[in-house]
Length: 501
Ligand SMILES: Cc1ncc(COP(=O)(O)O)c(C=O)c1O
Image (cartoon, rainbow, N blue to C red; front, side, top):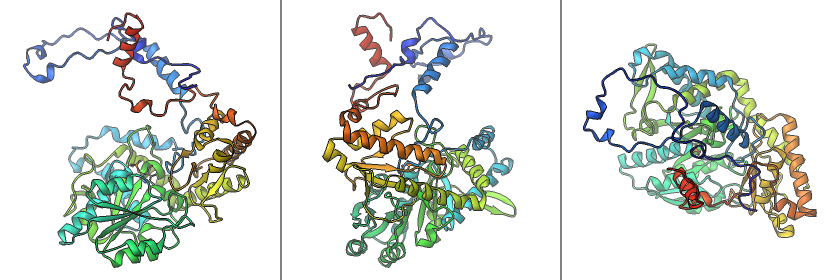
Protein backbone atom coordinates (compact mmCIF):
# COMPACT_ATOMS: atom_id res chain seq x y z
CA UNK A 1 0.00 0.00 0.00
CA UNK A 2 2.84 2.41 0.81
CA UNK A 3 3.86 4.93 -1.79
CA UNK A 4 1.05 3.91 -4.12
CA UNK A 5 0.34 6.85 -6.34
CA UNK A 6 -2.51 7.48 -8.72
CA UNK A 7 -0.12 9.39 -10.92
CA UNK A 8 3.39 10.51 -10.41
CA UNK A 9 5.14 13.62 -11.62
CA UNK A 10 8.80 13.15 -12.45
CA UNK A 11 11.38 15.52 -11.03
CA UNK A 12 12.28 18.42 -13.26
CA UNK A 13 15.76 16.90 -13.62
CA UNK A 14 14.15 13.80 -15.07
CA UNK A 15 12.18 15.72 -17.67
CA UNK A 16 15.01 18.00 -18.69
CA UNK A 17 18.24 17.21 -20.49
CA UNK A 18 21.52 18.96 -21.09
CA UNK A 19 20.86 19.93 -24.73
CA UNK A 20 17.58 21.84 -24.47
CA UNK A 21 17.47 25.52 -23.69
CA UNK A 22 14.30 27.37 -22.81
CA UNK A 23 15.46 30.76 -24.02
CA UNK A 24 18.21 32.38 -26.10
CA UNK A 25 20.64 34.75 -24.51
CA UNK A 26 22.11 37.31 -26.85
CA UNK A 27 25.78 36.97 -27.59
CA UNK A 28 28.08 38.73 -25.14
CA UNK A 29 29.20 42.11 -26.39
CA UNK A 30 31.45 42.92 -23.42
CA UNK A 31 34.95 41.50 -22.83
CA UNK A 32 35.05 38.32 -20.72
CA UNK A 33 36.88 39.50 -17.62
CA UNK A 34 35.44 36.93 -15.26
CA UNK A 35 37.57 34.06 -16.55
CA UNK A 36 40.75 36.03 -15.69
CA UNK A 37 39.71 36.72 -12.14
CA UNK A 38 41.58 34.47 -9.72
CA UNK A 39 38.80 34.50 -7.17
CA UNK A 40 37.40 31.43 -5.49
CA UNK A 41 33.97 32.72 -6.33
CA UNK A 42 34.49 31.85 -9.99
CA UNK A 43 35.93 28.42 -9.37
CA UNK A 44 32.74 26.69 -8.42
CA UNK A 45 31.74 23.62 -10.37
CA UNK A 46 29.17 24.38 -13.02
CA UNK A 47 25.71 23.51 -11.71
CA UNK A 48 24.01 20.96 -13.89
CA UNK A 49 20.70 22.67 -14.54
CA UNK A 50 18.10 20.69 -16.43
CA UNK A 51 17.29 22.14 -19.85
CA UNK A 52 13.58 22.40 -20.69
CA UNK A 53 11.31 24.31 -23.02
CA UNK A 54 9.12 26.90 -21.33
CA UNK A 55 5.96 24.91 -22.05
CA UNK A 56 7.43 21.90 -20.26
CA UNK A 57 8.33 23.98 -17.21
CA UNK A 58 4.87 25.53 -17.03
CA UNK A 59 3.11 22.17 -17.41
CA UNK A 60 5.36 20.51 -14.83
CA UNK A 61 4.58 23.09 -12.18
CA UNK A 62 0.89 23.29 -13.03
CA UNK A 63 0.65 19.49 -12.75
CA UNK A 64 2.43 19.63 -9.39
CA UNK A 65 0.09 22.36 -8.18
CA UNK A 66 -2.91 20.24 -9.20
CA UNK A 67 -1.62 17.33 -7.16
CA UNK A 68 -1.45 19.60 -4.15
CA UNK A 69 -4.08 20.92 -1.78
CA UNK A 70 -4.24 24.40 -0.31
CA UNK A 71 -6.65 26.63 1.52
CA UNK A 72 -7.71 28.03 -1.87
CA UNK A 73 -8.96 24.51 -2.77
CA UNK A 74 -10.95 23.82 0.34
CA UNK A 75 -11.10 23.86 4.14
CA UNK A 76 -7.83 23.16 6.00
CA UNK A 77 -8.92 22.51 9.58
CA UNK A 78 -5.38 22.09 11.00
CA UNK A 79 -5.63 22.78 14.73
CA UNK A 80 -2.90 24.95 16.23
CA UNK A 81 -1.67 25.87 12.75
CA UNK A 82 -4.49 28.27 11.81
CA UNK A 83 -4.57 27.64 8.09
CA UNK A 84 -7.15 30.24 7.30
CA UNK A 85 -7.98 31.82 4.00
CA UNK A 86 -5.90 34.90 3.28
CA UNK A 87 -7.77 37.59 1.35
CA UNK A 88 -6.14 38.36 -2.00
CA UNK A 89 -6.35 42.16 -1.72
CA UNK A 90 -3.51 42.00 0.80
CA UNK A 91 -1.14 40.80 -1.90
CA UNK A 92 -1.45 44.12 -3.75
CA UNK A 93 -0.17 45.95 -0.68
CA UNK A 94 2.63 43.44 -0.31
CA UNK A 95 3.75 43.96 -3.90
CA UNK A 96 4.01 47.71 -3.44
CA UNK A 97 6.98 47.39 -1.09
CA UNK A 98 9.10 45.45 -3.51
CA UNK A 99 10.40 48.69 -5.00
CA UNK A 100 12.21 49.73 -1.81
CA UNK A 101 15.70 48.83 -0.73
CA UNK A 102 15.99 48.26 3.01
CA UNK A 103 19.20 50.28 3.19
CA UNK A 104 17.58 53.38 1.71
CA UNK A 105 17.96 56.57 3.71
CA UNK A 106 14.96 56.73 6.09
CA UNK A 107 14.07 60.21 4.81
CA UNK A 108 13.35 58.70 1.37
CA UNK A 109 11.09 55.90 2.66
CA UNK A 110 8.93 57.67 5.20
CA UNK A 111 5.77 56.21 3.63
CA UNK A 112 6.62 52.58 4.29
CA UNK A 113 8.14 53.43 7.69
CA UNK A 114 4.91 55.20 8.64
CA UNK A 115 2.96 52.09 7.55
CA UNK A 116 5.14 49.86 9.73
CA UNK A 117 4.90 52.32 12.60
CA UNK A 118 1.11 52.28 12.38
CA UNK A 119 1.10 48.47 12.35
CA UNK A 120 3.36 48.49 15.39
CA UNK A 121 0.91 50.84 17.11
CA UNK A 122 -2.13 48.69 16.20
CA UNK A 123 -0.40 45.63 17.66
CA UNK A 124 0.43 47.58 20.83
CA UNK A 125 -3.25 48.45 21.13
CA UNK A 126 -4.46 44.91 20.39
CA UNK A 127 -2.07 43.26 22.85
CA UNK A 128 -2.16 45.91 25.59
CA UNK A 129 1.62 46.24 25.49
CA UNK A 130 3.79 49.36 25.57
CA UNK A 131 5.91 48.67 22.49
CA UNK A 132 6.30 46.11 19.71
CA UNK A 133 9.15 45.16 17.42
CA UNK A 134 8.18 43.81 14.02
CA UNK A 135 11.67 42.54 13.21
CA UNK A 136 11.00 38.87 13.99
CA UNK A 137 10.40 36.36 11.22
CA UNK A 138 8.30 33.71 13.03
CA UNK A 139 6.40 32.98 16.19
CA UNK A 140 9.15 30.77 17.53
CA UNK A 141 11.66 33.52 16.84
CA UNK A 142 9.44 35.87 18.89
CA UNK A 143 9.48 33.30 21.70
CA UNK A 144 13.26 33.08 21.63
CA UNK A 145 13.47 36.89 21.65
CA UNK A 146 11.08 37.00 24.61
CA UNK A 147 12.97 34.56 26.80
CA UNK A 148 16.29 36.19 25.89
CA UNK A 149 14.80 39.53 26.94
CA UNK A 150 13.82 38.07 30.32
CA UNK A 151 17.30 36.59 30.68
CA UNK A 152 19.09 39.86 29.86
CA UNK A 153 16.83 41.85 32.19
CA UNK A 154 17.68 39.48 35.04
CA UNK A 155 21.41 39.58 34.27
CA UNK A 156 21.34 43.41 34.21
CA UNK A 157 19.59 43.43 37.59
CA UNK A 158 21.99 40.85 39.06
CA UNK A 159 19.18 38.32 39.51
CA UNK A 160 19.91 34.63 39.12
CA UNK A 161 16.89 32.79 37.72
CA UNK A 162 17.39 29.78 35.50
CA UNK A 163 13.97 28.14 35.17
CA UNK A 164 11.15 28.71 32.73
CA UNK A 165 7.78 27.12 33.40
CA UNK A 166 5.81 25.85 30.43
CA UNK A 167 2.22 24.62 30.41
CA UNK A 168 1.87 20.99 29.33
CA UNK A 169 -0.62 22.14 26.67
CA UNK A 170 2.08 24.39 25.15
CA UNK A 171 3.30 24.20 21.58
CA UNK A 172 6.67 22.44 21.28
CA UNK A 173 8.40 25.66 20.31
CA UNK A 174 7.86 27.06 23.85
CA UNK A 175 10.14 24.59 25.65
CA UNK A 176 12.52 24.62 22.68
CA UNK A 177 12.91 28.42 22.83
CA UNK A 178 13.40 28.41 26.61
CA UNK A 179 15.97 25.66 26.33
CA UNK A 180 17.82 27.43 23.48
CA UNK A 181 18.05 30.50 25.69
CA UNK A 182 19.76 28.35 28.33
CA UNK A 183 16.85 27.90 30.73
CA UNK A 184 15.82 24.71 32.50
CA UNK A 185 12.30 23.86 31.33
CA UNK A 186 9.73 22.79 33.91
CA UNK A 187 6.30 21.62 32.80
CA UNK A 188 3.17 22.62 34.67
CA UNK A 189 0.42 20.05 34.43
CA UNK A 190 -3.12 20.79 33.41
CA UNK A 191 -6.04 19.74 35.53
CA UNK A 192 -8.94 17.55 34.43
CA UNK A 193 -10.72 20.57 32.98
CA UNK A 194 -7.80 21.13 30.59
CA UNK A 195 -6.69 24.31 32.37
CA UNK A 196 -3.37 25.06 34.05
CA UNK A 197 -3.45 23.53 37.53
CA UNK A 198 -3.10 26.48 39.89
CA UNK A 199 -2.16 24.33 42.88
CA UNK A 200 0.62 22.61 40.98
CA UNK A 201 1.82 26.01 39.74
CA UNK A 202 1.94 27.34 43.30
CA UNK A 203 4.08 24.36 44.33
CA UNK A 204 6.49 24.63 41.40
CA UNK A 205 7.01 28.38 41.19
CA UNK A 206 10.09 29.54 43.10
CA UNK A 207 12.79 32.23 43.27
CA UNK A 208 14.43 30.41 40.37
CA UNK A 209 11.41 31.03 38.12
CA UNK A 210 12.35 33.48 35.40
CA UNK A 211 8.96 33.18 33.74
CA UNK A 212 5.94 31.20 32.66
CA UNK A 213 5.13 30.67 28.99
CA UNK A 214 1.44 30.31 28.31
CA UNK A 215 -1.03 30.66 25.52
CA UNK A 216 -4.55 31.78 26.32
CA UNK A 217 -6.76 30.32 24.93
CA UNK A 218 -4.58 27.24 25.28
CA UNK A 219 -4.04 24.62 22.60
CA UNK A 220 -7.17 22.78 23.75
CA UNK A 221 -9.08 25.91 22.73
CA UNK A 222 -9.89 26.69 26.38
CA UNK A 223 -9.59 30.09 28.01
CA UNK A 224 -7.53 29.99 31.23
CA UNK A 225 -10.15 31.25 33.68
CA UNK A 226 -7.58 31.70 36.48
CA UNK A 227 -5.30 33.87 34.41
CA UNK A 228 -5.21 36.81 36.84
CA UNK A 229 -4.38 34.50 39.74
CA UNK A 230 -1.73 32.75 37.62
CA UNK A 231 -0.20 36.12 36.79
CA UNK A 232 -0.16 37.10 40.48
CA UNK A 233 1.54 33.84 41.54
CA UNK A 234 4.31 34.22 38.94
CA UNK A 235 4.86 37.94 39.52
CA UNK A 236 5.04 37.53 43.30
CA UNK A 237 8.16 35.41 42.76
CA UNK A 238 9.68 38.01 40.41
CA UNK A 239 8.92 35.94 37.30
CA UNK A 240 7.61 37.29 34.00
CA UNK A 241 4.56 36.09 32.12
CA UNK A 242 5.11 35.26 28.46
CA UNK A 243 2.13 35.10 26.09
CA UNK A 244 2.31 32.81 23.08
CA UNK A 245 0.06 34.79 20.76
CA UNK A 246 -0.41 32.09 18.15
CA UNK A 247 -4.01 31.65 19.27
CA UNK A 248 -4.91 35.33 19.23
CA UNK A 249 -7.70 34.93 16.67
CA UNK A 250 -9.79 33.39 19.46
CA UNK A 251 -9.78 36.61 21.52
CA UNK A 252 -8.80 39.35 19.08
CA UNK A 253 -10.35 42.67 20.05
CA UNK A 254 -12.20 41.10 22.99
CA UNK A 255 -9.51 40.75 25.67
CA UNK A 256 -5.85 41.73 25.67
CA UNK A 257 -2.86 39.78 27.01
CA UNK A 258 -1.59 42.98 28.64
CA UNK A 259 -4.78 43.22 30.70
CA UNK A 260 -4.43 39.56 31.72
CA UNK A 261 -1.07 40.36 33.32
CA UNK A 262 1.31 39.26 30.57
CA UNK A 263 4.65 41.06 30.19
CA UNK A 264 5.74 39.88 26.74
CA UNK A 265 3.67 38.72 23.77
CA UNK A 266 4.52 37.36 20.37
CA UNK A 267 2.09 37.40 17.47
CA UNK A 268 2.23 35.03 14.51
CA UNK A 269 1.16 37.16 11.58
CA UNK A 270 0.98 34.03 9.42
CA UNK A 271 -1.74 32.67 11.69
CA UNK A 272 -3.88 35.59 12.79
CA UNK A 273 -3.13 38.36 10.29
CA UNK A 274 -3.57 37.11 6.72
CA UNK A 275 -0.02 36.06 5.91
CA UNK A 276 0.38 32.67 4.17
CA UNK A 277 1.44 29.85 6.42
CA UNK A 278 3.29 26.59 6.05
CA UNK A 279 5.34 26.60 2.87
CA UNK A 280 3.34 29.54 1.54
CA UNK A 281 6.19 31.95 1.96
CA UNK A 282 8.25 33.50 4.73
CA UNK A 283 6.43 34.02 7.99
CA UNK A 284 6.27 37.19 9.97
CA UNK A 285 5.75 37.99 13.60
CA UNK A 286 5.87 40.72 16.20
CA UNK A 287 7.17 40.67 19.75
CA UNK A 288 5.73 43.16 22.18
CA UNK A 289 6.59 44.08 25.77
CA UNK A 290 5.57 46.15 28.76
CA UNK A 291 7.47 48.52 31.04
CA UNK A 292 11.22 48.03 31.42
CA UNK A 293 11.21 45.03 29.05
CA UNK A 294 10.59 47.38 26.08
CA UNK A 295 14.26 48.44 26.33
CA UNK A 296 15.26 44.86 25.52
CA UNK A 297 13.15 44.36 22.37
CA UNK A 298 14.86 43.12 19.21
CA UNK A 299 16.17 45.95 17.08
CA UNK A 300 14.85 48.04 15.41
CA UNK A 301 11.67 49.59 16.70
CA UNK A 302 10.07 52.62 15.11
CA UNK A 303 9.21 55.82 16.91
CA UNK A 304 7.47 59.01 15.80
CA UNK A 305 9.04 62.38 16.53
CA UNK A 306 7.99 65.73 15.07
CA UNK A 307 5.92 63.91 12.46
CA UNK A 308 8.92 61.87 11.27
CA UNK A 309 9.38 58.14 11.73
CA UNK A 310 12.74 57.31 13.27
CA UNK A 311 14.45 53.93 13.39
CA UNK A 312 15.54 53.21 16.92
CA UNK A 313 17.70 50.57 18.55
CA UNK A 314 16.16 49.87 21.98
CA UNK A 315 18.59 50.89 24.71
CA UNK A 316 19.42 47.42 26.02
CA UNK A 317 18.30 45.41 23.00
CA UNK A 318 19.01 41.68 22.82
CA UNK A 319 20.13 42.41 19.24
CA UNK A 320 18.64 41.41 15.94
CA UNK A 321 16.33 38.48 15.23
CA UNK A 322 15.96 39.34 11.56
CA UNK A 323 17.68 41.38 8.91
CA UNK A 324 16.51 44.98 8.51
CA UNK A 325 12.83 45.41 9.52
CA UNK A 326 11.63 41.81 9.27
CA UNK A 327 9.62 40.40 6.36
CA UNK A 328 8.22 43.76 5.32
CA UNK A 329 6.01 42.44 2.50
CA UNK A 330 4.17 40.28 4.99
CA UNK A 331 3.96 43.10 7.51
CA UNK A 332 2.20 45.18 4.88
CA UNK A 333 -0.21 42.29 4.23
CA UNK A 334 -1.11 42.28 7.93
CA UNK A 335 -1.56 46.05 7.86
CA UNK A 336 -3.91 45.92 4.85
CA UNK A 337 -5.85 43.08 6.51
CA UNK A 338 -6.31 45.07 9.70
CA UNK A 339 -7.37 48.23 7.86
CA UNK A 340 -9.87 46.14 5.90
CA UNK A 341 -11.33 44.69 9.10
CA UNK A 342 -11.51 47.91 11.08
CA UNK A 343 -12.29 47.94 14.81
CA UNK A 344 -15.56 46.00 14.63
CA UNK A 345 -14.17 43.55 12.06
CA UNK A 346 -11.29 42.71 14.37
CA UNK A 347 -13.75 41.68 17.06
CA UNK A 348 -15.71 39.59 14.60
CA UNK A 349 -12.58 37.47 13.99
CA UNK A 350 -12.77 36.25 17.58
CA UNK A 351 -16.54 35.90 17.52
CA UNK A 352 -16.66 33.98 14.25
CA UNK A 353 -13.74 31.65 15.05
CA UNK A 354 -15.36 30.78 18.39
CA UNK A 355 -18.77 30.34 16.80
CA UNK A 356 -17.38 28.07 14.06
CA UNK A 357 -15.62 25.83 16.60
CA UNK A 358 -18.63 25.45 18.86
CA UNK A 359 -20.99 24.93 15.93
CA UNK A 360 -18.80 22.05 14.82
CA UNK A 361 -18.74 20.59 18.33
CA UNK A 362 -22.54 20.65 18.39
CA UNK A 363 -22.70 18.99 14.97
CA UNK A 364 -20.36 16.21 16.11
CA UNK A 365 -22.10 15.56 19.40
CA UNK A 366 -22.77 11.89 19.95
CA UNK A 367 -20.58 10.64 17.09
CA UNK A 368 -19.37 7.24 18.22
CA UNK A 369 -15.57 6.94 18.48
CA UNK A 370 -14.90 10.69 18.70
CA UNK A 371 -14.76 12.06 22.24
CA UNK A 372 -14.32 15.70 23.11
CA UNK A 373 -11.06 16.27 25.00
CA UNK A 374 -11.32 17.04 27.84
CA UNK A 375 -14.85 15.76 27.89
CA UNK A 376 -16.57 18.80 29.37
CA UNK A 377 -19.07 21.38 28.23
CA UNK A 378 -16.73 24.38 28.39
CA UNK A 379 -16.97 26.76 25.46
CA UNK A 380 -14.00 26.34 23.13
CA UNK A 381 -12.47 29.37 21.48
CA UNK A 382 -10.64 29.01 18.13
CA UNK A 383 -10.04 25.24 18.17
CA UNK A 384 -11.14 21.93 19.63
CA UNK A 385 -9.48 18.61 20.40
CA UNK A 386 -11.17 15.23 20.04
CA UNK A 387 -9.79 11.86 21.05
CA UNK A 388 -10.22 8.88 18.73
CA UNK A 389 -9.05 6.47 21.46
CA UNK A 390 -12.40 4.66 21.52
CA UNK A 391 -12.29 4.14 17.75
CA UNK A 392 -8.73 2.80 18.03
CA UNK A 393 -9.60 0.46 20.91
CA UNK A 394 -12.94 -0.74 19.53
CA UNK A 395 -12.35 -1.07 15.81
CA UNK A 396 -8.65 -0.44 15.25
CA UNK A 397 -9.13 2.86 13.43
CA UNK A 398 -6.56 5.44 14.51
CA UNK A 399 -6.51 9.24 14.44
CA UNK A 400 -4.17 8.98 11.46
CA UNK A 401 -6.62 6.73 9.57
CA UNK A 402 -9.40 9.26 10.16
CA UNK A 403 -7.16 12.12 9.02
CA UNK A 404 -6.28 10.21 5.83
CA UNK A 405 -9.89 9.36 5.13
CA UNK A 406 -11.01 12.97 5.33
CA UNK A 407 -8.77 13.78 2.34
CA UNK A 408 -11.16 11.80 0.14
CA UNK A 409 -13.84 14.40 0.89
CA UNK A 410 -11.73 17.25 -0.50
CA UNK A 411 -10.91 18.42 3.01
CA UNK A 412 -7.40 18.76 4.36
CA UNK A 413 -6.47 16.61 7.37
CA UNK A 414 -6.79 18.06 10.85
CA UNK A 415 -3.78 18.08 13.17
CA UNK A 416 -3.25 14.68 14.78
CA UNK A 417 -1.33 13.39 17.81
CA UNK A 418 -1.02 16.93 19.23
CA UNK A 419 -1.42 17.95 21.97
CA UNK A 420 0.03 14.83 23.49
CA UNK A 421 -2.27 15.11 26.49
CA UNK A 422 -5.06 13.51 24.45
CA UNK A 423 -4.63 9.94 23.24
CA UNK A 424 -5.26 9.65 19.48
CA UNK A 425 -5.73 13.40 19.35
CA UNK A 426 -7.56 15.05 16.47
CA UNK A 427 -7.26 18.79 16.71
CA UNK A 428 -9.55 20.90 14.57
CA UNK A 429 -9.46 24.62 13.92
CA UNK A 430 -12.23 25.55 11.49
CA UNK A 431 -11.16 29.24 11.54
CA UNK A 432 -13.28 32.34 11.25
CA UNK A 433 -13.20 32.51 7.47
CA UNK A 434 -15.05 29.34 6.42
CA UNK A 435 -18.61 29.56 5.06
CA UNK A 436 -21.31 27.63 6.85
CA UNK A 437 -21.55 24.95 4.15
CA UNK A 438 -17.82 24.17 4.58
CA UNK A 439 -18.39 23.54 8.29
CA UNK A 440 -21.41 21.37 7.47
CA UNK A 441 -19.31 19.40 4.99
CA UNK A 442 -16.54 18.88 7.53
CA UNK A 443 -19.01 17.65 10.16
CA UNK A 444 -20.77 15.38 7.68
CA UNK A 445 -17.49 13.93 6.44
CA UNK A 446 -16.39 13.13 9.98
CA UNK A 447 -19.77 11.55 10.78
CA UNK A 448 -19.58 9.36 7.70
CA UNK A 449 -15.99 8.36 8.37
CA UNK A 450 -16.80 7.35 11.94
CA UNK A 451 -19.82 5.37 10.77
CA UNK A 452 -17.74 3.54 8.17
CA UNK A 453 -14.99 3.02 10.76
CA UNK A 454 -17.53 1.14 12.87
CA UNK A 455 -18.97 -0.97 10.05
CA UNK A 456 -16.01 -1.42 7.67
CA UNK A 457 -12.86 -0.37 9.53
CA UNK A 458 -10.57 -1.74 6.82
CA UNK A 459 -12.02 0.76 4.37
CA UNK A 460 -10.85 3.65 6.54
CA UNK A 461 -7.51 2.01 7.29
CA UNK A 462 -6.79 1.78 3.56
CA UNK A 463 -7.77 5.39 2.78
CA UNK A 464 -7.22 7.78 1.06
CA UNK A 465 -8.41 6.61 -2.34
CA UNK A 466 -8.90 9.83 -4.30
CA UNK A 467 -5.68 11.72 -3.69
CA UNK A 468 -2.76 12.00 -6.11
CA UNK A 469 -0.54 10.16 -3.63
CA UNK A 470 -2.02 7.64 -1.23
CA UNK A 471 -0.35 6.61 2.04
CA UNK A 472 3.22 7.72 2.22
CA UNK A 473 6.02 6.37 4.36
CA UNK A 474 5.90 8.83 7.27
CA UNK A 475 9.63 8.70 7.97
CA UNK A 476 10.96 8.45 4.42
CA UNK A 477 11.95 12.11 4.26
CA UNK A 478 14.06 11.71 7.39
CA UNK A 479 16.10 8.85 6.03
CA UNK A 480 19.60 9.61 4.77
CA UNK A 481 18.65 8.74 1.21
CA UNK A 482 16.25 11.66 0.87
CA UNK A 483 15.24 12.09 -2.75
CA UNK A 484 17.75 14.45 -4.23
CA UNK A 485 18.11 14.82 -7.98
CA UNK A 486 21.48 13.06 -7.68
CA UNK A 487 19.91 10.15 -5.87
CA UNK A 488 17.18 9.80 -8.49
CA UNK A 489 19.71 9.86 -11.34
CA UNK A 490 21.87 7.24 -9.61
CA UNK A 491 18.80 5.06 -9.14
CA UNK A 492 17.92 5.35 -12.82
CA UNK A 493 21.47 4.43 -13.78
CA UNK A 494 21.14 1.38 -11.58
CA UNK A 495 18.13 0.42 -13.68
CA UNK A 496 20.37 0.62 -16.74
CA UNK A 497 19.15 3.96 -18.04
CA UNK A 498 21.72 6.17 -19.71
CA UNK A 499 21.28 9.41 -17.79
CA UNK A 500 23.86 11.99 -16.82
CA UNK A 501 24.11 13.78 -13.54
C1 LIG B 1 0.59 27.71 19.84
C2 LIG B 1 1.78 27.95 18.93
N1 LIG B 1 2.87 28.58 19.41
C3 LIG B 1 3.94 28.81 18.66
C4 LIG B 1 4.02 28.40 17.34
C5 LIG B 1 5.26 28.64 16.56
O1 LIG B 1 5.09 29.60 15.58
P1 LIG B 1 5.93 29.61 14.23
O2 LIG B 1 5.47 28.45 13.41
O3 LIG B 1 5.60 30.93 13.61
O4 LIG B 1 7.38 29.54 14.59
C6 LIG B 1 2.92 27.73 16.78
C7 LIG B 1 2.98 27.27 15.39
O5 LIG B 1 2.25 26.49 14.86
C8 LIG B 1 1.77 27.49 17.60
O6 LIG B 1 0.69 26.86 17.13
